[in-house]
Image 1 (spheres, rainbow, N blue to C red):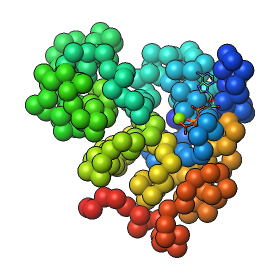
Image 2 (image 1 turned 90 degrees about the vertical axis):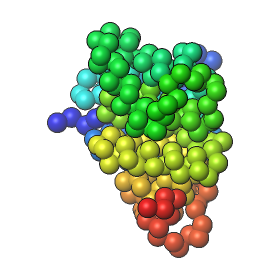
Image 3 (image 1 turned 180 degrees about the vertical axis):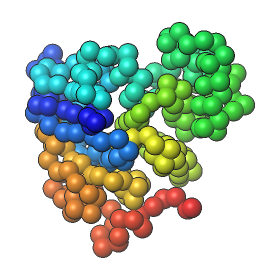
Image 4 (image 1 turned 30 degrees about the vertical axis):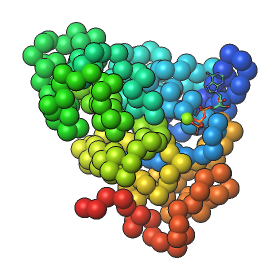
Length: 251
Ligand SMILES: Nc1ncnc2c1ncn2[C@@H]1O[C@H](COP(=O)(O)OP(=O)(O)OP(=O)(O)O)[C@@H](O)[C@H]1O
Ligand SMILES: [Mg+2]
């Protein structure tokens, strides 16, 4: 079986000449829980936006389940869901229900199937009872859960979270972490972009750093964590504490 994602010699240059991704070769296997970190501007967001075709490679290829993303854009949008830090700004509908139904409606699924999927997705993130609220009348943490529901409703293989903890209070962080861990336990592949290693590293199977558009470290959290300061990322303290004990989840 091919990897979930196979990235070959990926380069992305923005129209103004900025080289955001500079020769990435990488693979992601199903079931991984990856933390991707690195300093501001190192190319993390630009890299992951190629996974579902939001960005087109300047050169190189991104294969999803063995097929170039560019040849299956609709499937790629379904298979790889992305939760961005400004989740609310991407919301399009007038109600929570319609926001979650938007994706499956675009797939032209039958109405009963859409209804079932929306109910399942809202239940999964604990937003039942919010169906008729306007998305902008939710808290930041609730909006992030709504964004997750809008992705789960598409039955994705992989979820990418780009800075999911920004602006959340302690309860919001714990809720978001719980969602991510449950999604991983449920068989989804997870990639979290964060500078906050201590929040999620205990759950990760792999830690990756980017610098200047390149992957500069990739391995188990134990082996890669000591390199954090070199790549502009704060090492969680105390430094001698085992990674597995750095969990923010109480259960
Ligand atoms: N639309 C754009 N046009 C031109 N340059 C861009 C654009 N978007 C990002 N860049 C540049 O590409 C590089 C990589 O940006 P990217 O957003 O991928 O970084 P990042 O690692 O996600 O950073 P952060 O941690 O701040 O989110 C940066 O130099 C950035 O200024
Ligand atoms: Mg970014």
